[in-house]
Every structure is written in structure tokens, then in C-alpha cells.
Image 1 (tube, rainbow, N blue to C red):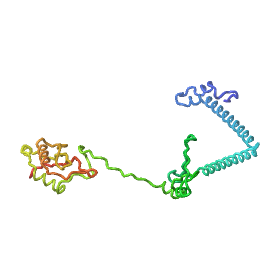
Image 2 (spheres, rainbow, N blue to C red):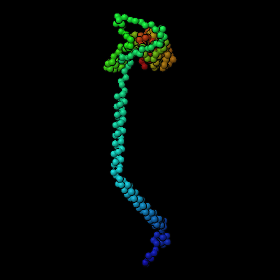
Image 3 (tube, rainbow, N blue to C red):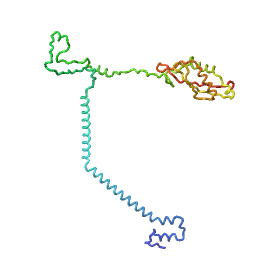
Image 4 (cartoon, rainbow, N blue to C red):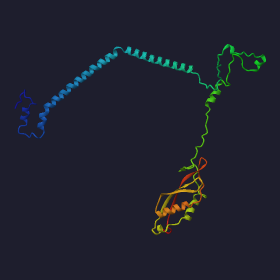
Length: 286
């Protein structure tokens, strides 16, 4: 069987003829049917790529031709711009030097010699009284007509600089202390006579376990806060962390019975200070 030369292998009639009586769901039928579209897309892409390459080549030749046309002009322009920048920088440096030379060092008027201007008073001729002094009187006085008075000072710049660098430190007076204020912390906290060990011993010796708390086996720690006044005595007392009403009450009683403390001090003055004391209640044998 011979194939006609004018047969279009991509035509739908030819594809139907080939797959006649065969399974068209297998996939080869669809691939063959879409082959014409794929060939057309491939040719279109190739044509677009060729056009883009041709345009890029033309653009590159145009840019290179323009850049090679007058390279001397670009070099000359670069040299001119560079020279202009150097001249501007030199002018700015010269102007800064002139400003620095023109600015004299500022000196305080109270140190350097100063000239007092003479004040003139206009009066009538008939009211003017000429006072004629003798030669001896003129010698005794330091002033003369037409002279100027100078403040005593110095023209020595070193002395002036030393005077300018002097730092005057004012002593700060301690702020007044409010006698009625209760401080949380002070420079010198209150001290129990004998120290903390003596304080704990006093509490242990004077603490009486409440009977009801002992029967109910209630134990724990009560934190009491109280004011040590500026006289050293115990002022306001409060429970900041309680355990049981009976234990709290006993802790407050013991604190109120404390002897006088050495009072706390702020800026050398005795002041009122809050003092915190934890008291632990523990039954013996448990």
C-alpha cells in the first residue's frame, strides 16, 4: 500500500483513520490529536525569540556606536567636573580659615582691663565753678584732666583661661526632714538594744502561745509591721501577713511591749521608720 504525497498527517481525518477500531481512551489518541497545536505553538515561540535577539543586537550596536563616537568629549567633561569640585573645596577651606582668624578669643570683661567711659554733664556757663588746684595738689592725686580710669585686671591670657576653667561647686544643704513623716528606708535604720539576736530572744521569752490555737494545733508565721518613732518607742502596729486571729493578736501584744529602739536617722536627724518583724509560732514536740 502506497501513501499519497498530499496526505496531511496532522489532519483529523488521518488521525481517525489510524485509530479506527482502536482504544481511543488510552491516551495516544489525544496526544496525536493535539500534536498540530503543539507544533504551531513551538514555531510561534521560536519566531518571537528570533525577533527579540535581533532587536537586542540592533540596540547594542546603536549604544556602542554612540559611546565610541566622541570618547574624548566624555574624558574632557570628567576632567572639567573634577577640577571644578577641587576649586570649590579649596574656596570653602579658605573661607573657613578666614572666619577662624577673624574670630578673637572671647575674654571675660571682669578679668581683662576695661576702660570706663567718662559721663558728661551739661550745665550753664554761669553755674560752672572752676576749681584751681596747686601743683602740690595735682601731684597728690592720681587723676588728671583727660585721663581715663582702668579697672585692675590682667592681660595675661593664661590667667584668664585658668579663671574661666574654675568650677564653682555649691554645697548642697540637706533637705529639711519632716518630723511627722514615716519613712520606709532611711540612711540609718532603727536598732534594737543588743542587735537582732537580742530582739529575737526578747520575743521568744515574752511570747505566750494562745490556748485555743494550741488545742487546734495551729502553727505558722505572723509578719508584723510597726513604727519605730524618732524617740525610739513603738508606735503604730499592724499585721501585714496573718495566720490566725489568736496568733495575730499575740504577735501584736508582744511587739507593743518591746523596749525602746535606737531610732533611725535621715540626714543626721532622728525620724519615724517602719520596721518589719516576722514572728513564728511553733508548738513544742511537733
